Image (cartoon, rainbow over the protein chains, first blue to last red):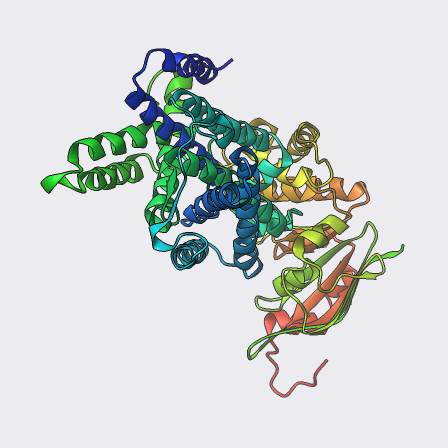
Length: 319
Length: 245
């Protein structure tokens, strides 16, 4: 096994045993890390491997969150199943965005703009619909019932978030080893050349965005039943889309562990600066810290942190 | 020999420019045909039309007797026509082996099988030792061979080569001609655009000459070099008021 492989095994053992020693607050930070790592990994499938820059992934989070929350409220469907329905509805939305973008050949920034536009439309529509609770949003009554994806302690959510993150990573690992993954990389590198080699780029990009949206929608359900409140501006907002995208890009988009590493770096940073600077005259300092970090990464590690780290680890020293 | 590719009265116009006009030619199974002509004669446009990257305004393209007009590039490739690009387009950050695997996956969906196939193709084109290098680090000659290897990995029955010898040294050209012959011996028909005349004359069985988007002449190399129309297209007609030949 490579050194990276051993490190991953050790890290997993540590993560599995952390709830035994950590405080409830510390656990909640880890839940955030896993949750954003999961979303970053889901984004990575279409944004990283396939190279189709989406800055509208919040749309899928929002759709997944509202779908499961409304199904639980109106028909009593357990969020354990609602999660899959939320993922499916998000996947349909992903398919729609993909069809519009890929059928009409939108690439790069034009595709990015399309994803932002769809997320914004979803936000505005949700904020103005009675069924979704309008701009005030939707609140889920706390019952502590595991069947309702609610628990009286943080630990179950910790393990669920960890499972989501590892599950998405397993999906990405499987994809890397299959034709699908090789084709996505080829499309990312040069779509025209990949077409000339028999790659149906439209089909594979569609598969990538649908899969990515499905996973992201599942994440939305987790969000809804962890926070128990949903506001259109939060779950459909551009800031959330940026948070997701940043983690994958800073960590290393199109790599297996990049989005996770990005989340381990950025999430605690965001959490700490929010905790210390969120009041009084220091409001927004965490955004400055974010911006600086992004500049550093783009300047010195344009491929992200993980590819650099992997080189260092595999060579036994900085190359 | 049976006809593999039939191009019939093909026309393509870009705004005011008639890039290809009324072009007809054929390629037989297992044949090597060179497509030559001065710059701007419409050779690369003809390639783009045959490979599905451009749609013709008029005309018909038949491959193994069936029309392929309106097929997308990946469908054309799946039918058995693979092309290279004049300006090579490697996947820069992927390894050389990975580059060729993309082509091999078309007929070998299993990644392990595709990897083995890609390795075999790399060995054949002489890039085996570079397999783990990222493609962006290759020299021009190596990139040209990589371009050829990727197309070859799709296991075509017709290979379209767009100036694979341009910019190569005499020795490199020599080796590439040998390689093209070896590929052809496996019953792969080859249509090549080429400016390197020595290569065209030695490797091709027939030559199709374009000028201004139209067919000027077609025939065996020996006959083509003496064709007055061809000489005029390349060198211009120096004799004022001379009768048109």
